Length: 255
Image (cartoon, rainbow, N blue to C red; front, side):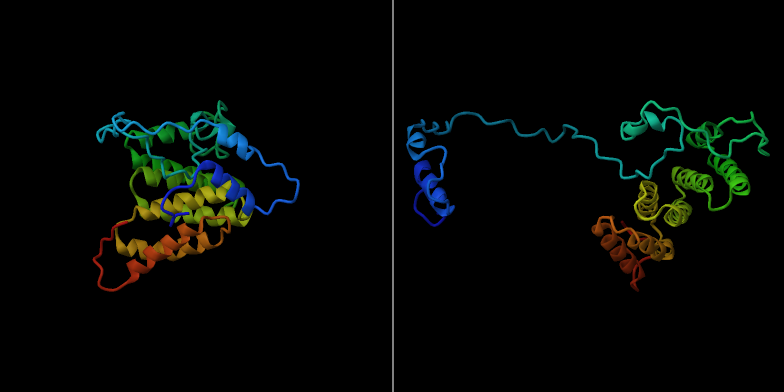
């Protein structure tokens, strides 16, 4: 049909398609050739009819999705985010470390996360990191180093490092949290994939080749353990790691 000098009429195309379909005898084909031939042909396009206006190059397009989606359910107000519909409207659950008799002071049972988050968003990153580390140690002592509560505080510390722009520390903490969740939840847990996403995002922000090479093998090993992961992510991660290992490259690398 592409090699033909002219496009066949609709009735001819209809007959060709029905004949090539291998239909059994007596099969009803709708519409019939007669009904199709009675339909009015569409009018030819008016060459003088203006088409749709071209897109404005200065008109901002839709916002690009945030590539950093490791979870964040530990921060206050997370339940109000559009991408957390299952928890929409739910009040944040206090961290497991917020228990009566905490050696860190404060009101017994009070959730320390709003204060830590406020410190970080206010630019007081060192204070926020120190306080989160103290809570992590307290929770580890109370519930165990491999407990879910302790892993959540490791993820909080990872996100604080990300907020402070310390991507080497954030990458290492996310990888450790992902390994801990893998050991406790298996490969299908959404928190496992959220931790892997956090590790991958922070690793892509590394500009120093030594940092890329240092944490890259651990990240690749974690990604290989997730069968449901998009295989393209693993290929791109391995390719960037291989390129960073190649001799003769400058110390700083581009993502």
